Amino acid sequence: MSKDTAIKEGEMSSARGLRPTSRSTELDGDLVARVAGRLRKSGYPALRRVSCESHEGVLVLRGHVRSYYLKQVAQELVRGVEGAELILNKVEVCARQASS
Image (cartoon, rainbow, N blue to C red; front, top):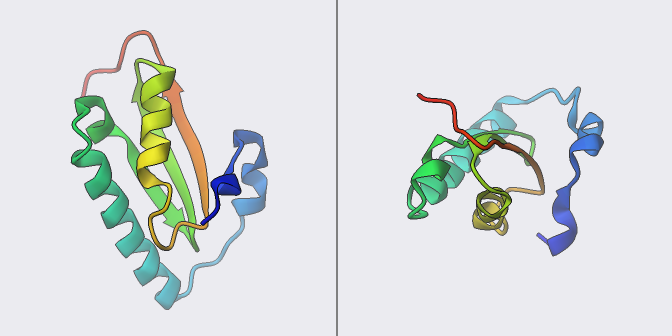
């Protein structure tokens, strides 16, 4: 995956309407598990609350963090994970995180 694979929020429409096959669903589940593991092991507690979903290699990160730095860290942690063709970073930066 190249450095240009992360795409902007406004380009998400190209990732909509994908119909998963049983093979792609299995691959997406494996990708989500690997990405979640990276976020959990990051050393940043806030990134443990970032969720991810995948549809045919399009990885979507969602959640809330307190800084743009943490939003970027989340994206960089998952860049290069095999199977992630595109990364949509939908993580929102909020001054105060919602309690879980």
